Length: 162
Picture 1: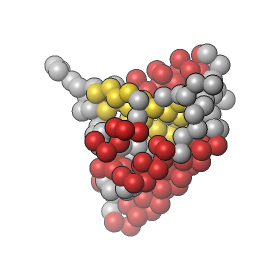
Picture 2: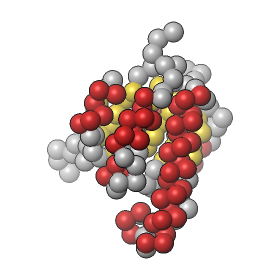
Picture 3: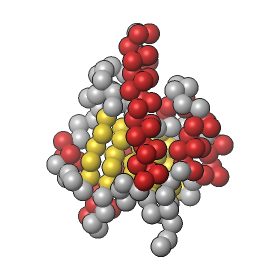
């Protein structure tokens, strides 16, 4: 069996989530199971009703409870949301370790590093636990140099005009 890849979509441009979801749609279309876990998008996030209609082939999870951006929350709300985000991170690690799906998309997970919600060591541990049979797509604005040895492809998306 071939080892499935770890793909990163990063950069300041728009379209990282769309690229990741496109990869998920292609996988689902070929009969693979896909799990999407969104981070730092609040409980509302982007409207993914269409994607949610693709269940059970493509399942979307959001663990956050507040609709506001993490940085806009008060101290108490940030503490509560941080716990929710850590639960999502733990769920992602479990999915990777058990091979619960064929493709796991961790949308905006790289932002957890920017906010110091997880350490670089925790992120390395998450990437290292991946079963060979599971493909992984991660998104976020900043790709840390320390993670390059753990990933197969990095696509940097930038807006050049507009």
